[in-house]
Amino acid sequence: MHDNDISRRRLLGTVGAAGATGLVLGAAGGAATYAGASGETPTALTSVGATGIAFHGEHQAGITTPLQACGHLIAFDLAPGAGRREAAALMRRWSALASELMAGRAAGDGDTGVALDAGPSSLTVTFGFGRTFFDRAALVAQRPPELDPLPAFSSDQLDAKRSNGDLWVQIGANDALVAFHALRAIQKAAGDAVRVRWQMNGFNRSPGATGKPMTARNLMGQLDGTRNPKPSEADFDKRIFVPSETSGTKYDWLAGGSYAVVRRIRMLLDDWEQLSLKKQELVIGRRKSDGAPLTGGTETTELALEETRPDGKLVIPDNAHARISAPEQNGGAAMLRRPFSFHDGIGADGTPDAGLLFICWQADPLRGFVPVQRKLDRGDALSAFIRHEASGLFAVPGGARAGEYVGQRLLES
Image (cartoon, rainbow, N blue to C red; front, side, top):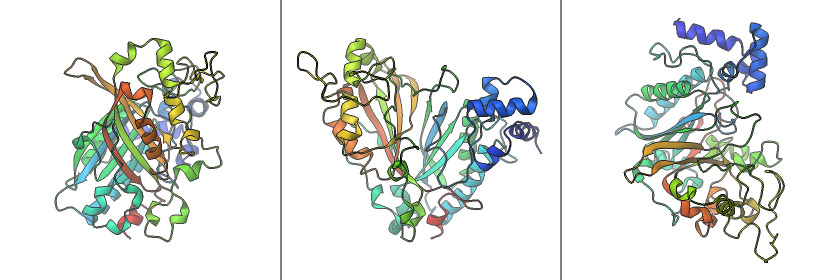
């Protein structure tokens, strides 16, 4: 047994049985467990590192998991000559590897040592299949109609080389080295079966950086995700996950799964930052300080869409982002936003190559992302300050049961 495996197992021992059975320990829970085991006063770092998330379960991890501090998105295409058999072998390898890494263990004998001494740090590894995968794996009959290509939008300036892909992997963690370690392990385990199509790297605010848990801010400084559906809502599973009624059909491999829409959205920060605070708030329809609607209240207060000013104009402008994207303005369309910010340096024109790796989850993209984006495309005030540069749509199977690998029901059907 390697030294790094020993050290990581010792740290995992402080997580206790809850980590082994798949319960997510938050910062407070992880800290309390560690303190009880070691007799020491925990630090925020210890609490973050000790948090583990189970690989096996009804749904894949990384969908409802709280936002992580850093992440990597990577898409692969099957190599020439590779098909269903090679894909099955690859998903078996990747699933076994992800299970070990998410438990905080080493990546086998060839482990690089990058995550030496670190705990699992809320690591998640999530797998999905793109539309073209089904052609190349001779599984067209099992491809759901929800994977039909997304419609074109007038604001799109998409780079085909950084869009779509046969296979998609989302990696997230609350420690950058743990996330990178998982990325390298996934890439190395791919072998000759696939080729990297594109990769994107992102980040969010670190857990514990604020005095209390709060909605994350994006690079424009806005709270991002205020109207997200919540697991406590009665219709949450119906909106986000493919229903179990799919069982018994040719799409039963997707029961308990979801669809991920991935968009690289460049933010034109130089232009945005020239706006006054008041004008920025009118573009969004919310206060920048706390995310509350311009009509008053707190971040969670409903938008008073009909409220007018003394001059008769709407308090929340008719082209405000919050108004146009509101579920009640889109027939109840809802999606779970779970993005990362990105910054890839300074472009040739001297402006920041930065923005949002937009990821949203839904049971049906034709009822979630598409109607909302169509509405935004027709008149969102924010459109002048963003540019959609890459896009992808992936079917993400349900979680693997113990002894299974992700996608097994599809690849062995």
